[in-house]
Amino acid sequence: MSKAKVMVVEDESIVAIDISQRLESLGYQVTATVSTGEKAVEMAEKTRPDIILMDIVLKGEMDGIEAAEEITKRMKVPIIYITAYSDEETLKRAKITGPFGYIIKPFEDRELHSVIEVALHKHQLERRLAENDELFRAILSSISDILFTADSNERLTMISSGPLAEYGLDADEVLGERVSEVFGDEVHSEMIERALRGETVSYEWVWQPMDKSHFETTLSPLRDFEGNINGVVGVHRDVTEKELARRALERETAINKSLAEVSKKLLSPMSLDEISESIIERAENLTESRYCMAGFFESDGLRNYFPSEEVGEECHLDAESTEMGGLWNLVIRKREPVLVNDPATHPESTGVPEGHIEIRNFLACPALLNDELVGILAVSGKDGDYDERDLEILERLADIYAIAIHRKIEEDRVRAGEEKNRALVQKFLKIVTEVLEEIK
Image (cartoon, rainbow, N blue to C red):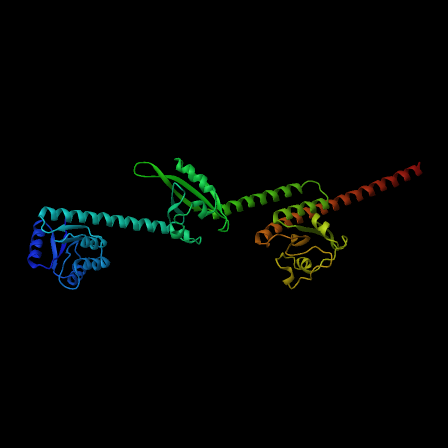
């Protein structure tokens, strides 16, 4: 084990020599012996001692207490005061500098050794405590969770400042406040009561002011050294992204299920009207639209279009009119989807005639089958803007619509052909019968 390095600050040379010799006999290494406060500051930085023995009364402008203050500002080194004076005023001044001990002249070797060893041990403990505190603060600042403690009255006694700042709050300002007041939900009070009774509880909640962020919190009892519960320790974890992902997955599942259901439904015998009505219902629900229209083409153009019930109730135009212009016609002409959340600003928009429903936003897709334009599907009236997800849904519905309409038209054409052939056969048989009758 290496010797502890000691610096002696003593203005009486004989006493300084005596202390140095006694220190060396006790196994310490004396790095320097100085007689003034100014020199003590200088040599402390040069020799970097493990401990300083500082006489309070020194010659010169700087006494021992002032020298200790200056040294403490520059480096972390334990200082023990040596003094022949133990008056209250001197001790009061000395206490402010946070000394690691006092030794009153005259003193014995055993007393000197004990004071130094206790001071070194105390300094080592404080250094470890400071390092642990530094590590604890580094951990708190690096984690994204909000770690906190609260007393039995639910008032915050500690909270991690790093993640809290991301939500516009200052840790120093919220200390002493109730948890439910800071985080705006009375569920915390109920859960803290349970934790104070010895339970470990986990729960989810929504922080309304913070854009409805979703959090998951775990609370555990906080016990003192005797095992008594005197508060709680908790962790708030932001699970907003996890919640949004869960909701997106649920919505995707619901959409896929709905598309599968309508695809299956359209395999059963249905009229063209029923096919369009089924597609309209799904399009409104899945894109959260108020209005929907679907139409299909025959050889000479758009022959049939079907408005949703809301369009029929609110639109006062001629229901037989199929003259479609503007954005609707743009989809037909270019055979590409159109997504516009401010139709009035679109160069192809022609506005709406008097009596038409209000069009605040517009989304339409062509129903194509092997590059053949089979129909068109359009929605409007969503609260908020349409996005790429809405476009994807409508395109998938338009594909289903194209297949269903094409299949139904082909079935009707085949059926019509079969009926025509049947009529011709019956007519031929009738003629043959009449001829045979005449022959007879």
